Figure 1 (tube, rainbow, N blue to C red):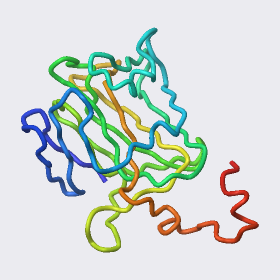
Figure 2: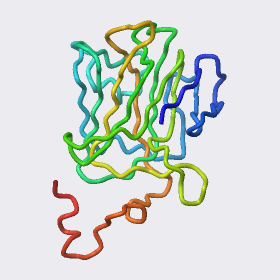
Figure 3: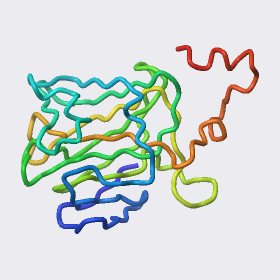
Figure 4: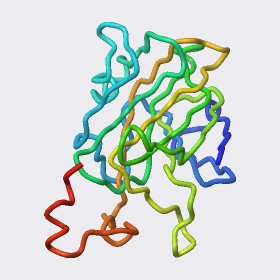
Length: 206
């Protein structure tokens, strides 16, 4: 499920086709306006390590001049924990090779699950000199209608930075957004939905 695309040379708002789908590339400093709802504010965010003043809050502040700066051994990771199972469609990352050089992520693994102990990889991505906001589907499983990809349903989403450009050690990520489906179909797509009232009362208990 690996996807490789050269992003640094693409103009603004150009979709980059890959074998597993389309990467939306916006060469913008501010988050692009997208039709998918941002659900990241509903979650608790944490990171594997950070330098003082460059913590996980920098991933969500929408300031292109701030960034999460890791401060520990590889791999580095960002963990997003939701209070209930969420339908997650896409992931947006703000990465800028021209400013961050060897701190820029080159290989990512996206994992999802219901607890830290059962996370499984749902997407693997490699990047070549990214510059701007890169948006891609979290799942590589085609939708039932043959168009687009299915959302995943998870309590936890984790982005693991496996490698940086030029074998850099620490990493910079200037922004990150978690996007849900345009229409929330969590109850339709979930293979094990809570439908009985006696069960629905326990839906949000972990």
